[in-house]
Amino acid sequence: MSSLSVLSIASEIYPLIKTGGLADVAGALPEALARENVAIRTLIPGYPAVMAKLESPTPVHVYSSLMGAPARVLAARAGGLDLFVLDAPQFFGRPGNPYLDVGGRDWPDNDLRFAALARAGADLGKGAVANYAADVVHAHDWQGALAPVFLHYDGGRRPRTVLTIHNIAFQGHFPAATLGAIGLPAHAMQIDGVEYFNGVGYLKGGLMFADRITTVSPTYAREIMTPEFGMALDGLLRVRADAVEGIVNGIDDSVWNPATDSEIAVNYSALRIEMRAGNKAALQRRFGLTVSSDPALVGVISRLTAQKGLDLLLAELPDLVAHGAQLALLGSGDKSLEEGFLAAAQNHPGAIACMIGYDENLSHLMQAGIDFIVVPSRFEPCGLTQLYGLRYGATPIVARVGGLADTVIDANDAALSAGVATGLQFSPPSAPSLAHALKRAFALYADEAAMRRTRLNGMRADVSWRGPAKQYAALYRTLARTDA
Image (tube, rainbow, N blue to C red):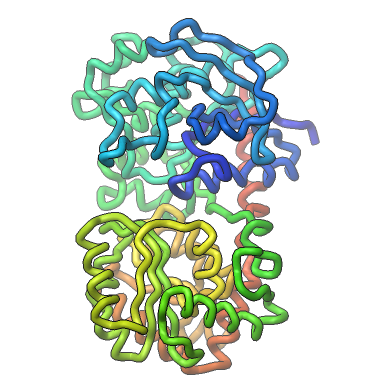
């Protein structure tokens, strides 16, 4: 099988810079695709956190002006990844969050910053760097979505393109004046171009011109073609339905491996499941919960937002405590939700505990120590939290949406009888439905044999990138065989 070259364009990548699941996906795909004889090189912005970790960076392309600022492309390695880095200090030489200022607002020049990233990606795809050629350019989310747009309007021969939607709620919508500032022609400002609600739509343009569109689960691919989940892009996606494919995310099962994880208190595996109990006790001590094996320990590792459905869980905390269960929460987000969970912890010491913020290392111990991981999202393109939960034996309780529906087998009577259940699903995403799911979970927990079987099923499920990588490789090869 001949080798294939893919240029990935991402605004974040683990382990260099991460705000969410996009970074995990962008960081894991290169190694997974290497096994399929696909070489991925990733173009990322030169944030300070990235620049500090580069190994032997070498300038390979220089812009005297890229979206009005000097810039250069560096070839480098970091974190085991082959990279192109867009070194544009005027755009990316800023500390903190890649997208937001210290006040939590979008950077006012995000339109230029990520147009620059996509423009550089399009140029690299067309051969701007000597001895580098991409068979496919794979852009991620709105921050990379203009790459297929630039390639379309540039004309001439170009590589084939893929655009992946990680969350259609984030679209990159900017004023009409942005069109000229980013170098697109005037005729691009039309309905079959980048025009979107009288402005410029980065994701919309990418969806219009990418050769193929993927999203991160089959169910989400269907959902975003409906008005309920499509965020005003459902009509365009229905028109392009033949180009849309859902490929579920995987996780890096070498990083997320309870048998070798150095961040947990006691290592264990499906063959040594009894060792897992040491992590529950360690987690209870870490959070100041009553140390006991008796209560079901429910966990949340999430952004605290309405999308994630954490208001539904907040409403059910009195019943959760009444059932004798415990809750450990790690996350941050909406102030009202933060305050609500902190108040619940104050009212129920020893039973509810919260840590506001995010701690990657602590998230590993949580997955190893909790009995159930709750993901009550109103919509969820894929979700990685439930995959980590399956891998670590933290049985997922999930809303039946998007990738949650695709990755968790509900512990209904038939699934339990057949011995295939891996978690619990509920629908619709509402407080009463979640309350019923929690009651089912506590009944499952009380049945030691059924709980053990369900936990082991989850731990033995293949949630790695091996299957998804084969699907991506097949997609790339199909595209590469088609001239553009």
